[in-house]
Image 1 (cartoon, rainbow, N blue to C red):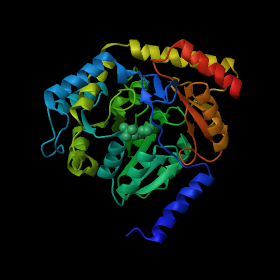
Image 2 (tube, rainbow, N blue to C red):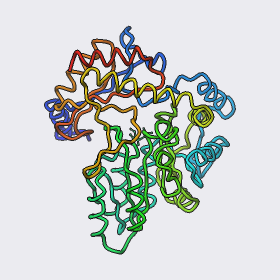
Image 3 (tube, helix red, strand yellow):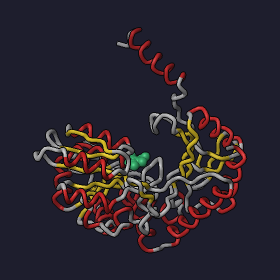
Length: 398
Ligand code: PMP
Protein backbone atom coordinates (compact mmCIF):
# COMPACT_ATOMS: atom_id res chain seq x y z
CA UNK A 1 0.00 0.00 0.00
CA UNK A 2 1.16 3.53 -0.79
CA UNK A 3 1.14 4.76 2.82
CA UNK A 4 1.82 8.29 4.06
CA UNK A 5 5.22 7.17 5.35
CA UNK A 6 6.13 5.79 1.94
CA UNK A 7 4.96 8.96 0.17
CA UNK A 8 6.89 11.16 2.60
CA UNK A 9 10.03 9.08 2.11
CA UNK A 10 10.10 9.54 -1.67
CA UNK A 11 9.01 13.17 -1.49
CA UNK A 12 11.74 14.11 0.97
CA UNK A 13 14.35 12.19 -1.05
CA UNK A 14 13.47 14.23 -4.15
CA UNK A 15 13.43 17.45 -2.11
CA UNK A 16 16.95 16.70 -0.89
CA UNK A 17 18.11 16.16 -4.46
CA UNK A 18 16.49 19.46 -5.38
CA UNK A 19 18.25 21.26 -2.56
CA UNK A 20 21.67 19.98 -3.68
CA UNK A 21 20.91 20.60 -7.37
CA UNK A 22 21.13 16.88 -8.06
CA UNK A 23 17.57 16.26 -9.14
CA UNK A 24 17.47 15.04 -12.75
CA UNK A 25 14.86 14.94 -15.44
CA UNK A 26 14.79 13.79 -19.04
CA UNK A 27 14.56 16.45 -21.73
CA UNK A 28 12.96 15.32 -24.98
CA UNK A 29 15.06 16.29 -27.99
CA UNK A 30 13.90 15.64 -31.54
CA UNK A 31 16.97 14.45 -33.49
CA UNK A 32 17.22 16.12 -36.91
CA UNK A 33 20.50 14.50 -37.95
CA UNK A 34 23.50 13.16 -36.04
CA UNK A 35 24.57 16.58 -34.74
CA UNK A 36 21.38 18.63 -34.51
CA UNK A 37 18.24 18.35 -32.43
CA UNK A 38 15.04 20.40 -32.23
CA UNK A 39 13.46 21.57 -29.03
CA UNK A 40 10.37 23.79 -28.86
CA UNK A 41 10.81 24.89 -32.45
CA UNK A 42 14.49 25.83 -32.16
CA UNK A 43 17.44 23.90 -33.59
CA UNK A 44 20.42 23.13 -31.36
CA UNK A 45 23.91 21.82 -31.99
CA UNK A 46 24.45 18.57 -30.07
CA UNK A 47 27.81 18.47 -28.27
CA UNK A 48 26.92 15.88 -25.64
CA UNK A 49 26.26 12.69 -27.56
CA UNK A 50 28.29 9.47 -27.79
CA UNK A 51 27.39 9.08 -31.46
CA UNK A 52 31.12 9.49 -32.15
CA UNK A 53 31.07 8.53 -35.82
CA UNK A 54 27.69 10.07 -36.59
CA UNK A 55 26.42 6.66 -37.69
CA UNK A 56 22.91 6.98 -36.22
CA UNK A 57 21.81 8.77 -39.38
CA UNK A 58 24.11 7.14 -41.96
CA UNK A 59 21.97 6.15 -44.99
CA UNK A 60 23.48 2.67 -45.31
CA UNK A 61 23.11 1.98 -41.57
CA UNK A 62 19.45 3.05 -41.71
CA UNK A 63 18.93 0.86 -44.80
CA UNK A 64 20.51 -2.13 -43.07
CA UNK A 65 18.22 -1.68 -40.05
CA UNK A 66 15.21 -1.48 -42.37
CA UNK A 67 16.28 -4.62 -44.26
CA UNK A 68 16.65 -6.48 -40.97
CA UNK A 69 13.09 -5.57 -39.96
CA UNK A 70 11.76 -6.58 -43.36
CA UNK A 71 13.54 -9.93 -43.14
CA UNK A 72 12.99 -10.83 -39.49
CA UNK A 73 10.26 -8.57 -38.06
CA UNK A 74 10.20 -5.96 -35.32
CA UNK A 75 10.89 -8.16 -32.30
CA UNK A 76 12.87 -11.30 -31.55
CA UNK A 77 10.05 -12.85 -29.53
CA UNK A 78 12.22 -14.76 -27.09
CA UNK A 79 15.42 -15.06 -25.13
CA UNK A 80 18.60 -16.27 -26.85
CA UNK A 81 18.45 -19.75 -25.32
CA UNK A 82 14.79 -20.26 -26.18
CA UNK A 83 13.47 -18.94 -29.50
CA UNK A 84 15.21 -15.56 -29.88
CA UNK A 85 18.41 -16.39 -31.79
CA UNK A 86 17.68 -15.36 -35.40
CA UNK A 87 20.48 -15.54 -38.01
CA UNK A 88 21.70 -11.93 -37.70
CA UNK A 89 22.80 -12.46 -34.07
CA UNK A 90 25.46 -15.15 -34.67
CA UNK A 91 26.48 -13.27 -37.84
CA UNK A 92 27.11 -10.11 -35.82
CA UNK A 93 28.95 -12.10 -33.16
CA UNK A 94 31.30 -13.52 -35.77
CA UNK A 95 31.85 -10.02 -37.15
CA UNK A 96 32.56 -8.60 -33.68
CA UNK A 97 35.00 -11.40 -32.76
CA UNK A 98 36.92 -10.78 -35.99
CA UNK A 99 36.89 -6.98 -35.50
CA UNK A 100 38.20 -7.31 -31.94
CA UNK A 101 40.76 -10.01 -32.85
CA UNK A 102 39.16 -12.40 -30.40
CA UNK A 103 38.06 -16.05 -30.50
CA UNK A 104 34.41 -15.43 -29.91
CA UNK A 105 31.80 -12.76 -29.12
CA UNK A 106 28.45 -12.65 -27.39
CA UNK A 107 25.81 -9.95 -27.83
CA UNK A 108 23.89 -8.61 -24.83
CA UNK A 109 20.94 -6.22 -24.89
CA UNK A 110 22.88 -3.20 -23.61
CA UNK A 111 26.42 -2.39 -22.55
CA UNK A 112 25.07 -2.08 -19.03
CA UNK A 113 23.71 -5.62 -19.15
CA UNK A 114 26.94 -6.89 -20.69
CA UNK A 115 28.98 -5.52 -17.78
CA UNK A 116 26.59 -6.69 -15.10
CA UNK A 117 26.13 -10.13 -16.67
CA UNK A 118 29.77 -10.72 -17.53
CA UNK A 119 31.27 -9.82 -14.17
CA UNK A 120 28.59 -11.58 -12.14
CA UNK A 121 28.67 -14.56 -14.52
CA UNK A 122 32.42 -15.11 -14.18
CA UNK A 123 33.16 -14.14 -10.57
CA UNK A 124 31.54 -15.21 -7.33
CA UNK A 125 31.90 -15.16 -3.55
CA UNK A 126 35.48 -15.98 -2.60
CA UNK A 127 36.87 -14.28 -5.75
CA UNK A 128 38.57 -10.87 -5.94
CA UNK A 129 37.90 -7.95 -8.27
CA UNK A 130 40.33 -5.07 -8.69
CA UNK A 131 38.39 -2.14 -10.13
CA UNK A 132 39.58 1.33 -11.22
CA UNK A 133 38.09 4.11 -9.08
CA UNK A 134 36.57 5.81 -12.15
CA UNK A 135 35.00 2.73 -13.72
CA UNK A 136 31.50 3.03 -15.11
CA UNK A 137 28.47 2.39 -12.89
CA UNK A 138 27.61 -0.79 -14.81
CA UNK A 139 31.02 -2.26 -13.91
CA UNK A 140 30.48 -1.31 -10.29
CA UNK A 141 27.03 -2.91 -10.29
CA UNK A 142 28.40 -6.08 -11.89
CA UNK A 143 31.13 -6.28 -9.25
CA UNK A 144 28.58 -5.88 -6.44
CA UNK A 145 26.22 -8.45 -7.92
CA UNK A 146 28.98 -11.04 -8.26
CA UNK A 147 29.46 -11.32 -4.49
CA UNK A 148 33.25 -11.22 -4.96
CA UNK A 149 35.42 -9.03 -2.72
CA UNK A 150 35.92 -5.68 -4.44
CA UNK A 151 39.17 -3.71 -4.16
CA UNK A 152 39.08 -0.28 -5.76
CA UNK A 153 42.43 1.03 -6.98
CA UNK A 154 43.18 4.72 -7.51
CA UNK A 155 42.45 5.86 -11.03
CA UNK A 156 45.08 4.50 -13.45
CA UNK A 157 47.47 3.99 -10.52
CA UNK A 158 49.30 0.72 -11.22
CA UNK A 159 51.46 1.02 -8.10
CA UNK A 160 48.35 1.12 -5.97
CA UNK A 161 46.86 -1.75 -7.96
CA UNK A 162 49.98 -3.83 -7.42
CA UNK A 163 49.94 -3.18 -3.68
CA UNK A 164 46.36 -4.48 -3.56
CA UNK A 165 47.19 -7.53 -5.67
CA UNK A 166 50.18 -8.35 -3.47
CA UNK A 167 47.98 -8.38 -0.38
CA UNK A 168 45.39 -10.82 -1.79
CA UNK A 169 45.11 -14.33 -0.39
CA UNK A 170 46.10 -17.13 -2.75
CA UNK A 171 42.58 -18.55 -2.92
CA UNK A 172 39.89 -17.49 -5.42
CA UNK A 173 39.92 -16.14 -8.95
CA UNK A 174 41.03 -12.58 -9.68
CA UNK A 175 39.77 -10.01 -12.16
CA UNK A 176 41.28 -6.62 -13.00
CA UNK A 177 38.63 -4.46 -14.66
CA UNK A 178 38.97 -1.04 -16.25
CA UNK A 179 37.31 1.28 -18.73
CA UNK A 180 39.43 1.49 -21.90
CA UNK A 181 38.58 5.16 -22.51
CA UNK A 182 37.13 6.65 -19.34
CA UNK A 183 33.63 7.93 -19.96
CA UNK A 184 33.78 11.20 -18.02
CA UNK A 185 37.48 12.08 -18.42
CA UNK A 186 38.35 10.77 -21.87
CA UNK A 187 41.71 9.40 -20.74
CA UNK A 188 42.96 5.94 -21.69
CA UNK A 189 43.77 3.06 -19.33
CA UNK A 190 47.49 2.12 -19.29
CA UNK A 191 46.78 -1.32 -20.71
CA UNK A 192 50.38 -2.57 -21.13
CA UNK A 193 51.03 -1.99 -17.42
CA UNK A 194 47.75 -3.66 -16.48
CA UNK A 195 48.68 -6.67 -18.62
CA UNK A 196 52.02 -6.98 -16.83
CA UNK A 197 50.24 -7.00 -13.48
CA UNK A 198 47.50 -9.39 -14.66
CA UNK A 199 50.20 -11.86 -15.76
CA UNK A 200 52.33 -11.40 -12.65
CA UNK A 201 49.40 -11.94 -10.27
CA UNK A 202 47.43 -14.40 -12.40
CA UNK A 203 44.36 -12.23 -12.79
CA UNK A 204 41.89 -12.10 -15.67
CA UNK A 205 41.94 -8.71 -17.39
CA UNK A 206 38.74 -7.06 -18.62
CA UNK A 207 38.52 -3.80 -20.59
CA UNK A 208 35.27 -1.92 -21.14
CA UNK A 209 35.61 -0.34 -24.57
CA UNK A 210 32.24 1.43 -24.60
CA UNK A 211 33.99 4.72 -25.46
CA UNK A 212 36.96 3.21 -27.28
CA UNK A 213 35.26 1.14 -29.99
CA UNK A 214 35.12 3.24 -33.16
CA UNK A 215 37.27 5.83 -31.42
CA UNK A 216 40.85 4.64 -30.83
CA UNK A 217 43.08 1.97 -32.37
CA UNK A 218 41.67 2.38 -35.91
CA UNK A 219 38.26 2.01 -34.27
CA UNK A 220 39.06 -1.46 -32.95
CA UNK A 221 39.52 -0.18 -29.41
CA UNK A 222 42.04 -0.04 -26.60
CA UNK A 223 43.63 -3.48 -27.02
CA UNK A 224 44.26 -2.88 -30.72
CA UNK A 225 45.62 0.59 -29.96
CA UNK A 226 48.25 -0.95 -27.68
CA UNK A 227 48.70 -3.93 -30.02
CA UNK A 228 47.88 -6.39 -27.25
CA UNK A 229 44.53 -7.98 -28.15
CA UNK A 230 45.87 -11.45 -27.33
CA UNK A 231 46.71 -10.38 -23.77
CA UNK A 232 43.30 -8.97 -22.84
CA UNK A 233 41.01 -11.75 -21.65
CA UNK A 234 37.72 -9.90 -21.95
CA UNK A 235 36.95 -6.99 -24.28
CA UNK A 236 33.55 -5.52 -23.63
CA UNK A 237 31.77 -2.94 -25.75
CA UNK A 238 28.51 -1.35 -26.67
CA UNK A 239 26.71 -1.03 -29.98
CA UNK A 240 25.06 2.15 -28.72
CA UNK A 241 27.80 4.74 -28.99
CA UNK A 242 30.13 4.93 -32.02
CA UNK A 243 28.26 2.08 -33.72
CA UNK A 244 25.04 4.11 -33.69
CA UNK A 245 22.73 1.31 -32.58
CA UNK A 246 21.77 -0.38 -29.32
CA UNK A 247 23.17 -3.40 -27.49
CA UNK A 248 26.31 -4.59 -25.72
CA UNK A 249 28.86 -7.27 -26.48
CA UNK A 250 31.67 -9.26 -24.95
CA UNK A 251 34.67 -10.73 -26.80
CA UNK A 252 36.70 -13.49 -25.15
CA UNK A 253 37.86 -17.06 -25.72
CA UNK A 254 35.51 -20.02 -26.26
CA UNK A 255 35.67 -21.09 -22.64
CA UNK A 256 34.64 -17.72 -21.20
CA UNK A 257 31.90 -17.13 -23.78
CA UNK A 258 30.51 -20.61 -23.24
CA UNK A 259 30.53 -19.94 -19.49
CA UNK A 260 28.62 -16.68 -20.01
CA UNK A 261 26.01 -18.37 -22.21
CA UNK A 262 25.37 -20.75 -19.31
CA UNK A 263 25.91 -18.49 -16.30
CA UNK A 264 25.19 -14.88 -17.21
CA UNK A 265 21.73 -14.00 -15.98
CA UNK A 266 21.35 -10.76 -17.95
CA UNK A 267 22.12 -12.79 -21.10
CA UNK A 268 19.90 -15.75 -20.26
CA UNK A 269 16.81 -14.04 -18.87
CA UNK A 270 16.17 -11.22 -21.33
CA UNK A 271 14.54 -11.21 -24.76
CA UNK A 272 17.10 -11.04 -27.57
CA UNK A 273 17.74 -7.67 -29.21
CA UNK A 274 15.51 -6.51 -32.03
CA UNK A 275 16.57 -7.11 -35.65
CA UNK A 276 16.75 -3.36 -36.41
CA UNK A 277 19.48 -2.90 -33.77
CA UNK A 278 21.50 -5.84 -35.07
CA UNK A 279 21.10 -4.85 -38.72
CA UNK A 280 22.30 -1.32 -37.97
CA UNK A 281 25.30 -2.55 -35.96
CA UNK A 282 26.32 -4.99 -38.71
CA UNK A 283 26.49 -2.20 -41.26
CA UNK A 284 28.31 0.17 -38.87
CA UNK A 285 30.95 -2.48 -38.27
CA UNK A 286 31.24 -3.18 -42.00
CA UNK A 287 31.81 0.53 -42.63
CA UNK A 288 34.37 0.79 -39.86
CA UNK A 289 36.30 -2.29 -40.98
CA UNK A 290 36.43 -1.32 -44.66
CA UNK A 291 36.47 2.46 -44.81
CA UNK A 292 38.82 4.58 -42.71
CA UNK A 293 37.28 7.92 -43.69
CA UNK A 294 34.88 8.30 -40.75
CA UNK A 295 37.58 7.33 -38.26
CA UNK A 296 40.03 9.76 -39.89
CA UNK A 297 37.41 12.53 -39.85
CA UNK A 298 36.82 11.95 -36.14
CA UNK A 299 40.57 12.27 -35.42
CA UNK A 300 40.67 15.46 -37.52
CA UNK A 301 37.74 16.93 -35.57
CA UNK A 302 39.34 16.01 -32.22
CA UNK A 303 42.53 17.85 -33.26
CA UNK A 304 40.54 20.80 -34.55
CA UNK A 305 38.60 21.10 -31.30
CA UNK A 306 41.74 20.74 -29.19
CA UNK A 307 43.39 23.64 -31.03
CA UNK A 308 40.25 25.79 -30.98
CA UNK A 309 39.85 25.32 -27.21
CA UNK A 310 43.53 25.98 -26.56
CA UNK A 311 43.27 29.25 -28.53
CA UNK A 312 40.51 30.25 -26.09
CA UNK A 313 42.78 29.41 -23.17
CA UNK A 314 40.66 26.41 -22.19
CA UNK A 315 42.81 23.56 -20.92
CA UNK A 316 42.27 20.20 -22.54
CA UNK A 317 42.76 17.71 -19.75
CA UNK A 318 42.25 14.20 -21.05
CA UNK A 319 45.87 13.07 -20.77
CA UNK A 320 46.50 9.76 -18.99
CA UNK A 321 48.74 10.10 -15.96
CA UNK A 322 50.20 7.17 -14.05
CA UNK A 323 52.38 7.63 -10.99
CA UNK A 324 54.37 10.66 -12.06
CA UNK A 325 54.17 10.01 -15.81
CA UNK A 326 52.05 11.83 -18.37
CA UNK A 327 51.45 9.56 -21.34
CA UNK A 328 51.19 10.81 -24.85
CA UNK A 329 48.35 8.49 -25.77
CA UNK A 330 45.98 9.11 -28.64
CA UNK A 331 43.50 11.96 -27.89
CA UNK A 332 39.86 10.97 -27.58
CA UNK A 333 36.62 12.80 -28.45
CA UNK A 334 35.68 13.31 -24.78
CA UNK A 335 36.73 16.76 -23.55
CA UNK A 336 36.01 17.20 -19.84
CA UNK A 337 35.71 20.91 -19.11
CA UNK A 338 35.94 20.85 -15.35
CA UNK A 339 34.38 23.87 -13.67
CA UNK A 340 34.10 22.74 -10.02
CA UNK A 341 30.68 23.24 -8.49
CA UNK A 342 27.44 21.72 -9.72
CA UNK A 343 25.89 25.23 -9.79
CA UNK A 344 28.61 26.57 -12.08
CA UNK A 345 28.29 23.59 -14.43
CA UNK A 346 24.51 23.99 -14.58
CA UNK A 347 24.78 27.73 -15.16
CA UNK A 348 27.24 27.28 -18.03
CA UNK A 349 25.14 24.56 -19.56
CA UNK A 350 22.12 26.89 -19.48
CA UNK A 351 24.08 29.78 -21.01
CA UNK A 352 25.31 27.51 -23.80
CA UNK A 353 21.76 26.31 -24.35
CA UNK A 354 20.69 29.91 -24.86
CA UNK A 355 23.39 30.15 -27.55
CA UNK A 356 22.02 27.05 -29.32
CA UNK A 357 24.45 24.46 -27.94
CA UNK A 358 23.53 21.33 -25.97
CA UNK A 359 26.35 20.54 -23.58
CA UNK A 360 25.18 18.68 -20.52
CA UNK A 361 26.41 19.46 -17.01
CA UNK A 362 27.81 16.35 -15.32
CA UNK A 363 27.52 16.49 -11.55
CA UNK A 364 27.99 14.27 -8.50
CA UNK A 365 27.34 11.39 -8.06
CA UNK A 366 28.41 10.75 -11.67
CA UNK A 367 31.69 12.60 -10.96
CA UNK A 368 33.37 13.38 -7.61
CA UNK A 369 32.33 16.41 -5.52
CA UNK A 370 34.04 19.58 -6.79
CA UNK A 371 34.70 18.04 -10.22
CA UNK A 372 31.44 18.98 -11.91
CA UNK A 373 32.00 19.54 -15.58
CA UNK A 374 30.71 20.02 -19.04
CA UNK A 375 31.41 16.80 -20.92
CA UNK A 376 32.00 17.97 -24.44
CA UNK A 377 32.08 15.31 -27.14
CA UNK A 378 33.20 15.73 -30.70
CA UNK A 379 31.91 13.50 -33.51
CA UNK A 380 32.99 12.80 -37.08
CA UNK A 381 29.78 14.46 -38.24
CA UNK A 382 30.50 17.90 -36.77
CA UNK A 383 31.59 20.63 -39.17
CA UNK A 384 34.67 22.72 -38.41
CA UNK A 385 32.39 25.78 -38.19
CA UNK A 386 30.35 24.00 -35.47
CA UNK A 387 33.48 23.25 -33.45
CA UNK A 388 34.77 26.80 -33.85
CA UNK A 389 31.45 28.24 -32.71
CA UNK A 390 31.43 26.04 -29.60
CA UNK A 391 35.03 26.91 -28.68
CA UNK A 392 34.42 30.64 -29.22
CA UNK A 393 31.22 30.55 -27.17
CA UNK A 394 32.93 28.66 -24.36
CA UNK A 395 35.78 31.19 -24.49
CA UNK A 396 33.28 34.02 -23.93
CA UNK A 397 31.48 32.27 -21.08
CA UNK A 398 34.27 30.70 -19.04
N1 PMP B 1 30.34 1.19 -20.05
C1 PMP B 1 30.64 2.49 -20.13
C2 PMP B 1 32.05 2.91 -19.86
C3 PMP B 1 29.66 3.43 -20.45
O1 PMP B 1 29.95 4.72 -20.50
C4 PMP B 1 28.34 2.98 -20.70
C5 PMP B 1 27.21 3.93 -21.10
N2 PMP B 1 27.24 5.17 -20.62
C6 PMP B 1 28.07 1.61 -20.60
C7 PMP B 1 29.09 0.74 -20.28
C8 PMP B 1 26.69 1.08 -20.82
O2 PMP B 1 26.42 0.94 -22.19
P1 PMP B 1 24.93 1.03 -22.73
O3 PMP B 1 24.58 2.48 -22.82
O4 PMP B 1 24.98 0.33 -24.04
O5 PMP B 1 24.07 0.31 -21.73
